[in-house]
Image 1 (cartoon, rainbow, N blue to C red):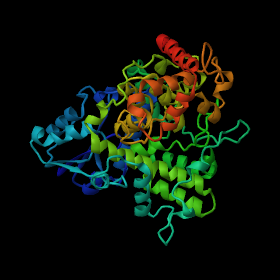
Image 2 (image 1 turned 120 degrees about the vertical axis):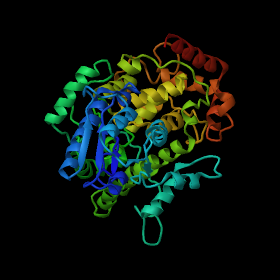
Image 3 (image 1 turned 90 degrees about the vertical axis):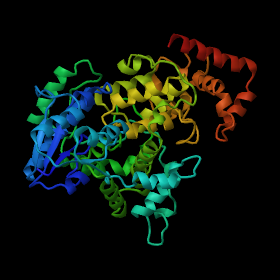
Image 4 (image 1 turned 30 degrees about the vertical axis):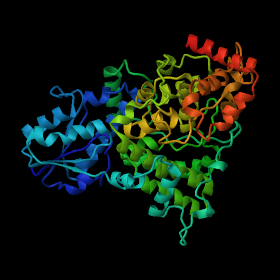
Length: 507
């Protein structure tokens, strides 16, 4: 055997660099389910089941292509429980000349890989993961000498590079780079809501579900019903249905939230893209084509492409540029423990309950639920950003540290002090009331600003601004808020702070 090729659980791509470098006639592919990876975060049951089932299906597809595959299931008696242990065990039974891997998505795994050559005493080739549109080095060059990183400028460079939604004269399609102002409409219950494509579990998936139910009983979330796709074909069907049925309205309502509507017009493609079952650039090209074929409006196509070509690539660049120190950043010195209701949904705040209940049921919530409900509350309440990060990493099926950590610490919690985002994403109850129908049946009155029964977001918002005044008042995007505070009467200011204090005291 020439090479032992290790494929990770988020590298389920047939033309990934390690497989392109390999030879199915000579090399062996190693895929492993290990307890270390399943438990380094308290992962949602559905997240574990999705990845293990997708891995098993991918291994079968590789065998059909002629590859020799060593696949180690979690319940194999000799499973050592770690990547390093399984590589070492395989090398003892396979006479490999070299170990071939594609660069890991997460810092801790990459660091582990970089120590393998010395540990195992054979060449280890770590190849670039070129499934990403922007390489780490390319992002580093873009970020050099910049005191603040702004996704909008990075995004424009990616548009020029890929020619997505670009015209022959070099100008952006429609004359604008960003149509976000058109993408903030609240939704109503009388709208037609498409149902995301769902996949019935086959024998392989059912076997995984049984194993997860038994081995991870204490992990958060519900396992049933399980309807995630687990193959390239399944993921392609999800993409096809999104473009045909949901993309036309995605832009208008991408920030909206409705009771009982978990998905609205969102794609649910991130878990498939992040695991390797869909290629991000090809997905963006499909959306570009849908616009050019007249099947989707420009604001929808641009808004969707910006999420992948802009944010996804951008946060990955920030992650690799700033790790390992990034995870410990806490600019606002927030230290409060994560409330227990983040794991149970047991709260009287209707918006939080809706977002958390959905998360525990589906291992999914869309970006506004994450940013402006669960994230906004954690920010205002002064929750330890590392604890918030660990929660997001655990409960969402699409969450890997490289994409989740910058979104949480940087965009949601402002823990990096403005490196990634220009201001904190802090909002009172008015925003949630405008963009959702959650407030209608809530125990708390969103229109009541202070006192018992008032929406906690209203008083927490002002308490957050005053608590962090020394760090935020010089931010030009926050000046108006502090001016508004100064114009309030002393009694009103005191009422806000006392209401927030009472709520936080019982939190």
